[in-house]
Every structure is written in structure tokens, then in C-alpha cells.
Image: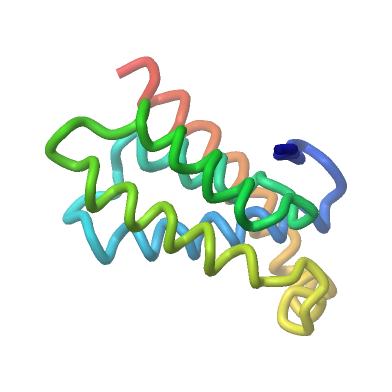
Length: 130
């Protein structure tokens, strides 16, 4: 089983991973009242960084093992189901689909995405230090 990640790669990958992360957070929001928890934020980031070249079964197994260390007993079942569903959905979203291509050609969205990534790291750092 090979699972690969991209982190701080080209801008197009960062845009794609940001969109994927937003989708994962939206799915987590369906099951949890608050997604403003460190474990949810980090798990959504890790799921979004898994490259599309990773096959679906490997991605699902890897995300399941992440869930074993991420969730407490109270949230394990719903958190794992949502993580696996989000992994399946994001697996089928291509990095070169027409919507992402349109977004990456928009200069306003490009700089907004850079600000979002910067704020994301500030939020994660704040959660770690809190």
C-alpha cells in the first residue's frame, strides 16, 4: 500500500487541496455541531493532502487508521464514517476539472486562497498552543 502526500507544492495543488479541505470540513459539519476542533481541522487537512494518484482502497485504509488515533470513543463511529465518506467523495474530484481550472485563472481567488492558507496555519497554530 502506497499513500502519497503533497504539501507546499505548486500553487495549483494548494488551490486544489484548499477546495478539497473545504469539502471535507463541510461533510464533517453535517455530523458535528462544531468543526472548530484541532483533530477535525488536522484530519481534514491530511485527507486533502493525499494525492489523487493514491488508489481508493489505500486511501480508505489509511484514513481509517488515522481515525483510530484521532477520535475519542464518543465521536469514533460518526467521525470515522464522515472521514471515510469524505475520502470517497474527494477521491473522485479531479485536480484538473473545469471548475478548478476556472478558479485558478481568477487573480482575486488566487490571492484569496493564499490568505486562506495563511489564516489556516494561524488557526492550527492557535489551536495547538491553546
